[in-house]
Image 1 (cartoon, one colour):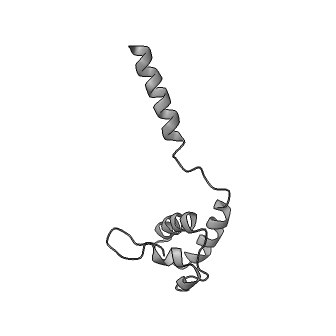
Image 2 (cartoon, rainbow, N blue to C red):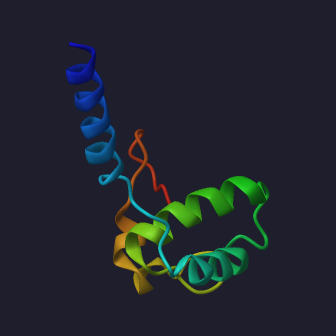
Length: 88
C-alpha cells in the first residue's frame, strides 16, 4: 500500500512540475526593457515586478517610461482583478 502511495506521489510531482513555466531565455530582454520602463516610477520594485510579468507573457514592453502602449497591444490589454491596467 505504501509503495502505491509513493509511486502515485512521485508521478504526481513529475506531472505537476511539467506544467510550471521554465524561465525563458529572453528574461534578459525583459529585465533591460523593464528597467527603462520603470526608471521614473515612484515604486520602482513594484513596477519592475509587474512589468516583468507582462513582458514574459507578451514578449514586448512599450518604449519610454510612460504611455506608448499602442506599441504592444497585449501589454496594454492586460487588466488586474479590479479591471484596471496591470502593466505599468
